[in-house]
Length: 62
Image 1 (cartoon, rainbow, N blue to C red):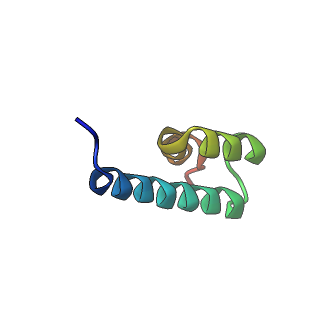
Image 2 (cartoon, one colour):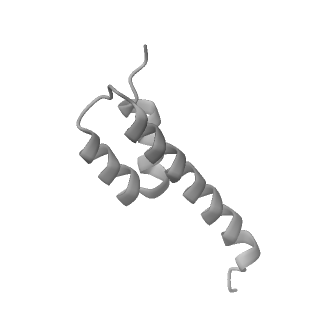
């Protein structure tokens, strides 16, 4: 049973939007937990999980 693009396309779009939002937030933030270059690699390489981890662990709470 092949998976249709009607199911996959919205998930890919949501993942890309979350990744773009996480990268933008990471670059604009002054202080984050850990080096920025590492978080950028985690966000890009980790796809959905990397973006979620950035918002849970990487972003400093004031």
